[in-house]
Length: 181
Image 1 (cartoon, helix red, strand yellow):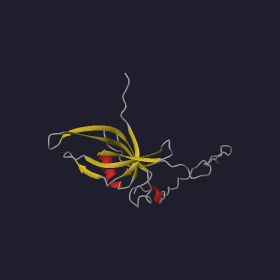
Image 2 (cartoon, one colour):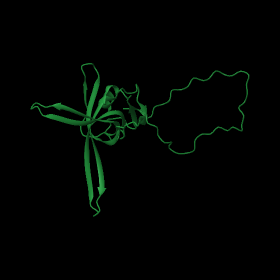
Image 3 (cartoon, rainbow, N blue to C red):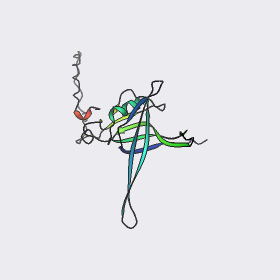
Image 4 (cartoon, one colour):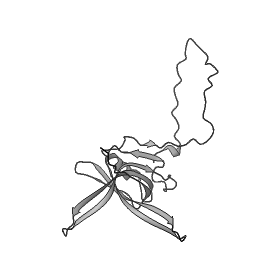
């Protein structure tokens, strides 16, 4: 039996600050809207642009992270699933809304581009049930250049019958680019 797939991947900018709330059971839920642009050139050479707005819902830890680090104008990558809900309005009409239930968010802009607000180059994953990893992990970056350090296998290490105690390791210094805020 074949499996079905409901997966959304999009990039765009937030149209407003996220709106965090909590359910009566204490679960965090944050909603925000992301605008994703599409540009193309028609056969007659005319440039066109179209903007599609997506309503994003992030639950639990991912919702708290979105509320804390995202602001209006933040450029983000969102991954999740599409969900359509229906409800009755005050006049008794059935209304529908489609939204992306996020399970992954990556801030794409740097701190400088975002006016010092959100982090930059950081990825936040959510478990399938909507819970995020306990600590955000920085996204991997490509090396800045040069060749990687190599061990010289042809030169044997000196042997000693008594090994000195290992020196305490210094704490690595954190560069401003490595901070998640």
